[in-house]
Length: 103
Image 1 (tube, rainbow, N blue to C red):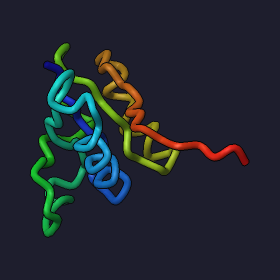
Image 2 (image 1 turned 60 degrees about the horizontal axis):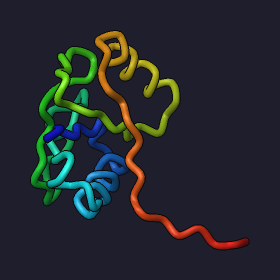
Image 3 (image 1 turned 135 degrees about the horizontal axis):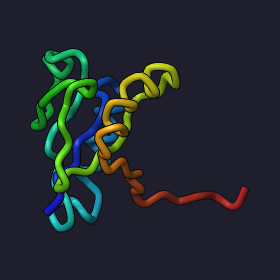
């Protein structure tokens, strides 16, 4: 089973973690393995089971890990993803069930 790691433990990351917990592949294809963030205490005070497991700038990805990006700022996103991309991290999109209206 793959380990899903969320890059960014801010508000967007916490929302993605919540969506991931409800996704039909959670516990079947992958499980939530934690967050990467430059702030080790980013989740302090939030009722979230997953923890910050490292810094995206120095984290060493392994083949059994997939990464979902939860950083809204484009400049910061490039800065924090570049080291992971250079190490061939498997960055994926999380697609939860969404209803799109006809309008």
